[in-house]
Figure 1 (cartoon, rainbow, N blue to C red):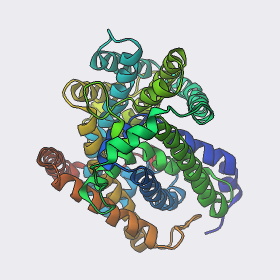
Figure 2 (cartoon, rainbow, N blue to C red):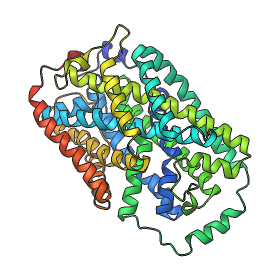
Figure 3 (cartoon, helix red, strand yellow):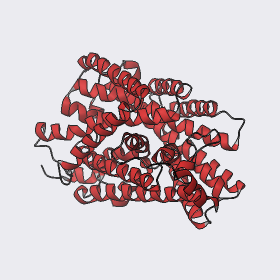
Figure 4 (cartoon, rainbow, N blue to C red):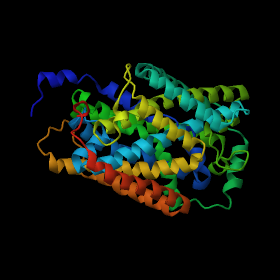
Length: 453
């Protein structure tokens, strides 16, 4: 099948544009909380850097695979529809329900609670849960009012992300490290042994830090619109993930200049939720730390705008495929899927007021890795079921990237769940409940909506 003029005219994105879209969706809230959450348990600086490199490798394997799927079916509705084509209605129902009822609401809960924590650092009278809940409600209502309004605010937020992160890195590397850091490093690690890379502790850290790379799936949005996809798609993925990993490593250098991993604790002696403010307070004058904290709050709000906007579309897509009540497949006069957005808001608020950031991060890791493994596995099924479909881009070194992603993901999820009884029970209930529901609603699939194919 050749590329005709019509198809060529639809490919409007060059290498720079494709990279920028993926980069903008990757960089969000995770970097400003996860290092603080996992630092004390990882003990050593080497483990801190290693966990970010492992997550970058996972994201690269996943993004390359999703790049092939996205280039094959650029208008097919992303991972939900890939699974539907590869494995059938029940499998896609499982992936859709996991993402709709848990994936996006958990992400929204994490980002809003992190934002609430940073706001509480500069406004101690403002409880994190209250501010988190209010922001989720306000942003949901904005998106219900107008899709264009939410998208415009998200574009502005992308610029602010780069500004805040760049300022933090440049300033953090330019100032002198606190004199107490070396003494703290020696005292805090004297009697501790760093966990190995194959330990359950390291696996749990990966399950939390992988949240910071969640945006790699955005490659499916641009896969069919990239010019010269054989060249630009893999290069765009490599550039976006490479640059985001470099930024993440540099930010971690700043964090580690402010304190050793085992000293990343809040006033209660617990791993800090707001590592950005923690580091800024130690490295900069108080007014600079507060200004950066406000900048991070704005960054997190912009990330919430993007996540809430995108998440509401999952309920809409499932309803249009006949796997969710029809109410959620409708839009208002300005194009917003109001019912789906409100459902997402209610679930997110329940998580904000009932669950800790640490638990949400681990659950996001376990359920997210499982769901994405099913999406990634659809590349194997589609290579068999649709061998004649044109693939403008194919996974390099196939089948190693998708296979590595699936095996690593399942090992990380298993190790993390088995190390904590509460997490094992919670994740089992979530996955088991979704499986039962998907077996039921998978029978109800109607003819897929042509707008989603």
